[in-house]
Image (cartoon, rainbow, N blue to C red; front, side, top):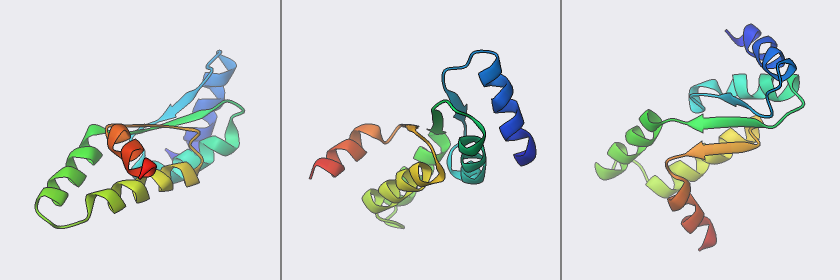
Length: 99
């Protein structure tokens, strides 16, 4: 799949895509990076509902600190090369970053 990711996204761009998306984001950070290198358009990464639910459940049980976990996850997606991050954590992350 990784080898095809860049090629498939190049085809998307040739067909007129203004943005390409990788989903789910966290397990495919390597794919985000490959796609970023392969295409001239913005790369979006979707932090899917399962990733959100896993963090929420673990935080509710006291297994991790939600704020630091979410900010680290979103930062890793950006560092991998995503120009746009779509996440269910968006409102919370925005509030945390304003503090």
